[in-house]
Length: 453
Ligand code: F0G
Image 1: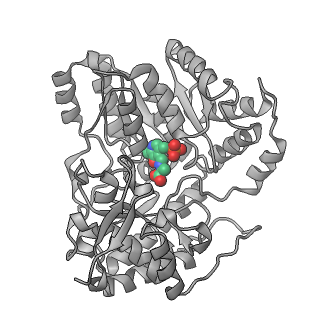
Image 2: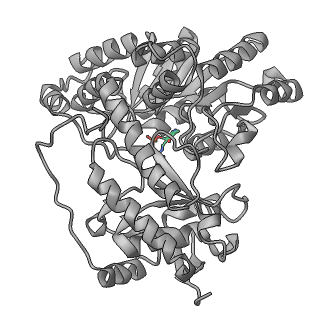
């Protein structure tokens, strides 16, 4: 059979509250044109993020009941540790409440003034935590990543020559770690090849630098390696994931993505000395080492989530769903980052609304348009998110797909809405910020719509 179906049946459902265009116009105005400020029950399809929004399986819910809530040495922790050891090869595993808690602990230990941390591209919270420690975050993606329509099988790769030149310039003693984000969220959810990870690792070895993965979406990355990298089509995804982790000296993980849970994170560290220091800091700020700020039941759900996420029927359906939505938009002539990544479609708002200049936020205009037309919540990744002092490299709108939550007909609805908005794109209007905080303004900024173009 050619049709790839959702490889699950639905046992428990959540109603979606329908709204009319008139109601949505009113709601959008009350939220000052910022969908972060809209109550979730006023959203029909929520594509704001794929993080913490997964549907859990019956086995995960069973784990919730089995959770051992002992303060120390919880059975749930040992089960989680076993699963992760098998999946990653790491013995030293710390649970945290989410990805950015792992980042904060790591960079508090190895960051600090004068230090510089290169990556293929840091996610916002990673960059913010590095900078919070006093260190500097630097992105070294391959040049292909800057052109939305240019197709490259591993557009998330790091520019290895640029990394070497960078290390020579800033000197290895100022670089506490090299990072690779898999998949590369900032560059469109694009994968990193095993060949690239190996090359980066070889450079790290030469300069005696540790390599850490930001491995939130490691399973989606492993699926792309299996389907696109020569020599891996017969290798099980789990073995590919294991190989990715074998090249790393540590990893920060938000389990809210490929852990298939609503809350949870991990910090993996090979070096026993650094691991010991991370344990001490975790106890100080998150909780004891066998729960790290989570309940025992959360650890059980995570353990089961990490087992399920490498199942190939699941990953085949997952990646196909994103590609299916992407194809429909491309067929209609809408510019997106190509090829579609693992967890989201990124619309190129500069070609969707070319009549709106960056200072009038074309991405935010498309975000507002999608909400008005169909109650779809999406996220601007462009001049609004970049803030007043930085220049956005692209004006994007991210449609992030929560895992196992929406069906094919939901995606047909989303595609129809995008195409309808595309046909009426000349009606989109720019925006002006009327109130915003200094940092991370996209969460709470208030906007005003400008007059008709
Ligand atoms: N690293 C990457 C690559 C991420 O995408 C995220 C979160 C984090 C780290 C931080 O993890 O949220 O558990 O603290 N990304 C979400 C998103 C928020 O919408 O892309 P967290």
